[in-house]
Amino acid sequence: MKKVLVIGCLNMDYSVTASRFPKPGETLLGESVKISAGGKGATQAYTVGKLGGRAAMIGYVGEDFQGQQLIDNLASVGVDVSGVSAYPGEVTGQAFITIDSSSGQNHIVAVGGANARVDRRAVDDHRAMFEEADIILMQHEIPVDTVYYAKELALELGKTVIIDPGPAFPDLREDFFRGVTYAKPNETELAILTGINTDTMEGIEKGAARMLEMGVEHVIVSLGGRGCYVADRSGSRLIEAIPVKAVDTTAAGDSFIAAFALALSAGRSEDEAIAYAQAVASISVTRKGAQASIPEPEELAAKGFVFS
Ligand code: RIB
Image 1: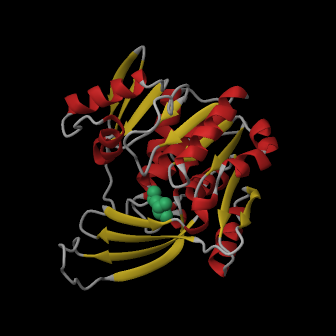
Image 2 (image 1 turned 60 degrees about the vertical axis):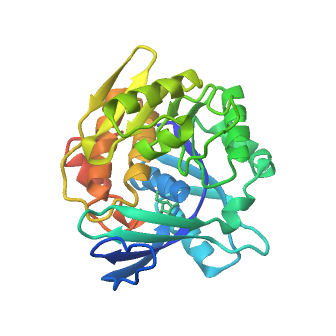
C-alpha cells in the first residue's frame, strides 16, 4: 500500500440542521446542532486512515482544546500527525454549516484561523514527508500559494498530485493546475475556476475540457446525486451515482476523493477507484457530520471492496 500525504485544513464543524435554508434576513428555528471534527483536509486524511490506508497530514491547529481534539481524532485511525502542530497565538479553524434536512444539502462558511498560516515554510519544514509519500492530496482551505508550491515540489519528486479545488477561486495563476494528476471540482467550483457556465451537461463538458487545457491530466467533476463526469485527453464519460437518501452531504466530496486516493494507493485502476469512492461517499451522506460519517472498512468489505 502506497502512502497518501494530505496537506490542508483542520476545522471544528458547527452544524445546524433546519427544515430548509433561511432566506436573507430571516430567522429560522433549527432542529439540531452537532459539533464535530471536520475540515476538508483532516476529513480526507481521516478517511484514508479509517479505511485502512497509510495516511499522513501536514497542517496547523490553534492553541486550544479543539485543535488537540482534531489531532487526537486523526491519530485514533492511524494517521501520522507528526506534521500537524499548534500555531502560536492562533485559533483552530471553524466551519459553520447549515444543513437542509429535507435534502441533506449544506451551506458552509469556514473561518481559517490556523489554517491560513500553512505557508511555503510549512512545506519546506516537512519535505521529508513529501519524499516518503506517493500521493499528495490537497484542497483550497489553506492559502492557494501554498497549494501551488506544494504541487511544484510534489511534481519535482515524481508524486501523484490530487487537488480537490474547494473553495474555488477565479483567476488563479496560469500554471496553477499544470501537471496536476487529478482535479476534482464540483460543478459550482468548475464554473468559478473556468469562468464557464456549468448549469448544463454541455457546460460541464466544456468546463472539464478547459481544466485539461489548463494542464490537469484527469478531471473528475462531482455532480452530487447525478454521479461524476470524468475526462482526460483520451475521452470522457458520465458515471452514475449510487442512489441513496442523503441526510448530510458535508463530507461527500472529501470522503469520495480520499477513498479514490486510497484505492489508487492500493494499486486499483481509475474505474475501480471511482467505484470504491462512490461506495464510500454514498454511505457518508446517509450520516451526520464530516469525520463522524466515514464508514468502517467492514461496511465496504460487505460490498466487496477489500484492499490488502
Ligand atoms: O467539505 C466539507 C468541509 O468543508 C467541512 O468539514 C468544513 O470544515 C469545511 O472544511
